[in-house]
Image (cartoon, rainbow, N blue to C red):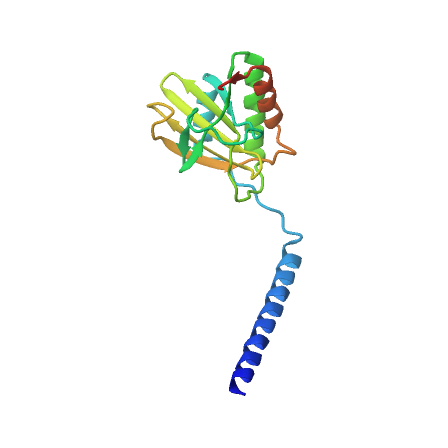
Length: 189
């Protein structure tokens, strides 16, 4: 009999716990429905980054999602502990394309956006300006970018930065990245 009473009390406590969780979720949802996600401010050193990007040689590195596996050894870097890689590469030689891409990227960084948890960057901007090396990896799915600026090369350690951008539906830079890769792709296979 004691066992039946114990089982009944345990079942009762689980039911009330579930009801409390359901009620809490409903309260949180109604509280958060009208709350707008705050974008993350651009990095403090973004003006230095912009100065170096303006006069840099630029390349776009992209990871084609249609590939069954992520590339193992092509252009792999680490930024904030995340592996950055790609299987498509394009050099930006056209001055007008470079201006368009940088203007759109700056606008995206200034606009910001809400961030999700993933960070699987499919677009990376590589820039070399004299003795400055900059990498900016962008995930349009989660609305985050991370980058680093270094004096010693792309693979070396450097000053890291990050921020938020609009998602792929409203980003201004994503269509330009995709156009560059489609028009001038150096496939690595």
